[in-house]
Image (cartoon, rainbow, N blue to C red; front, side, top):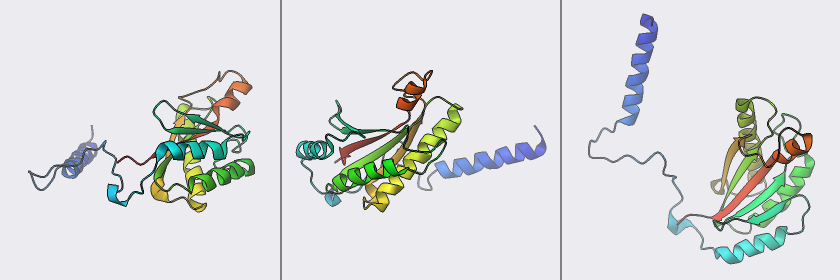
Length: 190
């Protein structure tokens, strides 16, 4: 290790130590895994079972998406993504925009819910590239929904890359099924 590398490593360790150390030894730091939410008093009350049924009815029958009641009580809106984005692109195509318009209109009626957008890719390309692509696509969907009037405080984006395939990535039909966007809708945690 060169003197420069050793010096840079020492500086990095000192910086990280300073960031992790509180000036007050009696002060507890927040857990890094704890998600900070809006104060409970600021959240509207939601009759989640009625709202879940309303969302399901409003989106039922659409051929371009599926609404699934999950075992945890949340709703999963599954949007096939084979034609939703250009190859390696992140901008939603017109067919996806039309679907997102309808979903946004329905979800705008319930401000007491949070919305997690998860992007998925097929297995073509490197794992890192697919992870980055899925995150960027989820972020593009979040931004589109924000522009459509959903508060950013309700929206989150995540990507799973190629890690959760629905079908075999060895066939074009399977890869097409694996390229998708999922939207999880749930009431804010209280």
